[in-house]
Image (cartoon, rainbow, N blue to C red; front, side, top):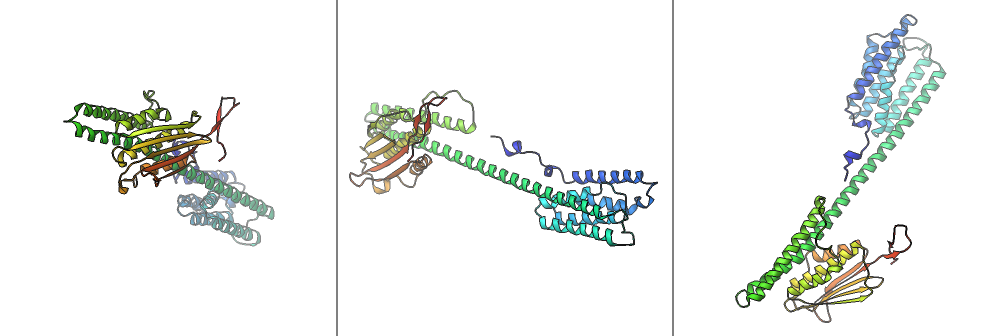
Length: 406
């Protein structure tokens, strides 16, 4: 999965904070000096002096603080720029710093402050330059036309800053949504892997525990039966190791060769029943309806439900128990596991992860499940119904599946 760092687009905010002020300062100072040299002999009253260079440098220096103090930065930059213009110095790229400061303030969320400071600076510049008849702040070349053009550019600049702010907020929301989705998918994957490991280990270790007890009991009196129990332990442990390696291989995303054993599904129901019988449980199977291929997710869930139910029978039902596994194919798949165990109430499967895991599987597939003691004949019952999509013919890529409405 590609991380956000690898897919995110570059943004101006990714630059170090000093880069923009350096570029703006260079352009303002060099551009204004070039304009000064151009008008040196025609308009000597517009030439730059020490005060002009201080005002030209004030704006870029203030931009160093635009991210931490956007409002204060904008106020300082606007003040320096207005003073520069009202003193009648040669007009160069002096408005570059105000443009950057306005955009920084608006995108930082200081919209009202940006509007107020920008409008205030424009009002001071217009009123003083148009209606002050004397002094150093009288701009002889400033007219109402200049005022209208400046106002238009100010509106365009604020509008562009607003658009930039909206796009930045939307991009941030998209990144947050993507990060939350990735976290949710990772959590779901961890839960799925934990559930698979529980189902695999709980069943096989329960079988190993039961057979180990049988082997210890029969070791001296009936060694041949003890040998059979030890053989069952060997098979169960080998299968547990194989399935654990498979799950961990998926977790590590390692490309491995095709598994030697078939994937877990109802096609392996006979093997599951055989291992339960080796553990001393009498198991009957009953299939009704017309069996048909199931989607992989439903097939695996059905197998795990039967596996966990038989594991609980092995653990809690007591010796000499009889269990029945019923499968009914109709609009969906009905799974029912019954036993006639006589274990104590405290031995009923509760408080563990098996039944909650079954419920999570069924809920994820949109099915229903009920579990609890049997009131009629004793023992325990697990009953689950899984919706099964029906194939739709005529697709260009072959049959596809479409869920039937429930």
